[in-house]
Amino acid sequence: MLRNANFGAEEDAMRSFRNTRGQIILVGLLALSVFACNSAKRATTTPETDALLRAARSGNADTVKTLLTSPNVDVNGVDADGNTALIEAARFGHDDVVEALLIARADVNAKNKQGKTALMLASEGGHDDCVRLLTQASGVR
Image (cartoon, rainbow, N blue to C red):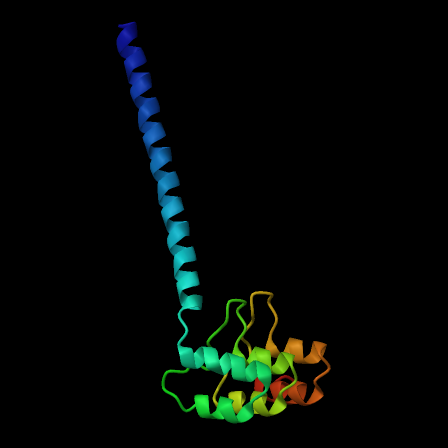
């Protein structure tokens, strides 16, 4: 009789272990899928979007305007640090590029991986014209 009681306890323990193990595996798979989706979203930029980011960083307004006419460019595409073309143009004070990107409906509220917006970076850099443009675009008073 004692042997049957021990067997029941062992069976319960094994069932509990399998349930816990299954839950851990499920949580791990969910976490992996979330991280994979986020990194895939960030890593899928077109050559045109990469060129837009480079042109915005360097302040080349003519190139930015030309690239914005391409159907393959994402005005809100991001680099490895989560920076958009608008964030990069504002960081370096390229007000003509900021204006072109805003006309193309760049997201003025986008944040990079450090949690900074274009307005924050323009303000930190003392780029008053960019701050004015971004403030007007965001409706901040």
